Length: 300
Image (cartoon, rainbow, N blue to C red):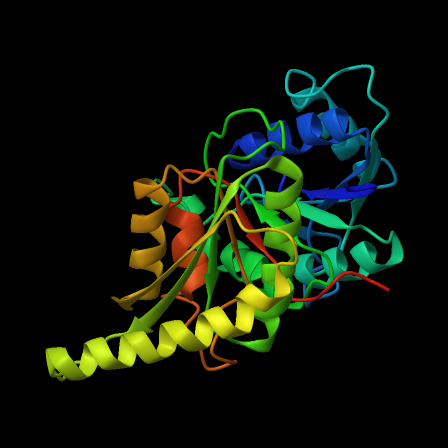
């Protein structure tokens, strides 16, 4: 299913669950795996120091700096991966989001696995890097050509055989690619696909009869748009509701015991607040299962 998996890490314990998931997924699917760590940029003063993202400090890189970081990553991941698995670890300087996207294209990665620092238990110095790393996840999820699988907390080891997949759509063009991905995974794993579209509520109360009529109209449009693209796959349920998108996604995921959420990046443009985040970020922070962001269809 996936031939080349790219796992990106900040080399901190926060990424351990994502690392564990990536290593086991690559082993089960017999996929190639590359581990990428972008450790920072030289300071604007052109000194010998670089800003390290983890630990939150300034380091002085020398000729052996990348070699030492590579050894540290391998040592810290020994208990997470099968030691016999062939895995390439790449450590380079740069802007994290830019380098992740560039190397994913160069390596023709068909899946990107990453963790996130946007955790509610970040305190002290870690909190200062919350927006930086959160923005990295947001930029990668929005621009990557490959699906981006995001792990924020403990998940059972992946067998890639799901029972209930939640596909959330905002009816954007990108959501068409996400739907194709969700159907593909559901078909291969024999899962039930739960399709959800949420009408965002406004501050002005709407007449209940008018809202019911609007929901019925949108549901018909959603079914006409997506059901015709499933081919022989029929194990799907459609739900259209009103509310806050990320809240409704999480509610449905809990209600149907979802073990995977698939969605396109729901950003509304460059003006979206990094502090508040978008629907994807809110789901990632709170979801108890992996979340996949898909914005582009498969090559060819």
